[in-house]
Length: 352
Ligand code: PMP
Image 1 (spheres, rainbow, N blue to C red):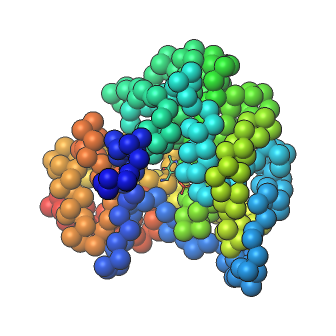
Image 2 (cartoon, rainbow, N blue to C red):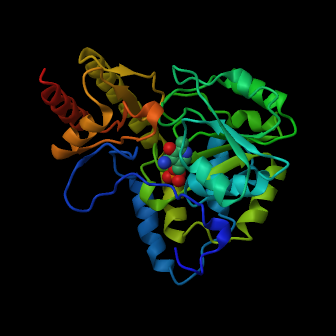
Image 3 (tube, rainbow, N blue to C red):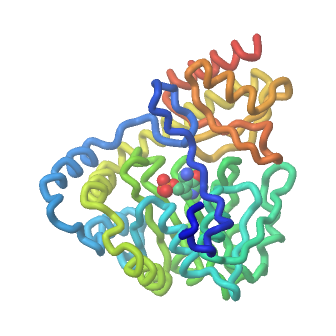
């Protein structure tokens, strides 16, 4: 730390992103990316947008919001596109967290929540999940706090039912409840339709997973117009052009190719079922995943050891040092061929 670094950040522990190795080609099952390329129109429109790079992009993302609104069944004024869903999550901490509105979220969840809380000086409490990694609803009912819930959760993959989220929304009318739906497209109920019923609901989603656009950085929030206005105040006070022209064009293209996205999601779900079955046959214990990853441990091999053994065989998965989950690995679901290679490597490591 230099002597110039602001004292308000001196204790900040930044988020550690998953490895993006540049040294060799791995079968990359570590950061929940899609194994499929972006849609044809996403690629075509972003290539066309290159011709207009001398101009600033539309700060209001008008066409992108219109297209998204059509697909989600909401109004364009109920959507705010952001630079990945990470940015809308940061905006939410900035806009809806303070001393009077401390944040709560599970102890095992997306690691950025603590970082954003720290960064923005928002007091927060991490609420332990139950031993089976499910949420104890009673911790959130009437909590009177700003609530962040990834649904399905990461890295556990477990989803809460929409009717349970409604109980949280109803019992916290004076606080914003943020439902992070980064993985919603892999077979789960979205809370987006609830924004018309609950003025305290913000739903966040991303183009990084189901729409194969992690490299473009595109996410968005959906909420009632009043919440979106607050979030826009934060956006226009930080980076009005938060979505670059190529990304915006790619996003519109991806939405015009929605059937491609749906087909890819169906394929990931099929490959997830294959992977889960094979891992269970090999003796793994796993959570019930509604995402594009599985979360698994084996009684005979330490989580960190399995991670290293796989890496030495050219397969990257994600291991977290956090004590409660250090026996586990999170394995992104790739193509069927990738998952076969992964299962074969695991079989070899276990000597089965
Ligand atoms: N929420 C969750 C639960 C995630 O796992 C991720 C991806 N790491 C994000 C949000 C952010 O994704 P992105 O910024 O790529 O939209």
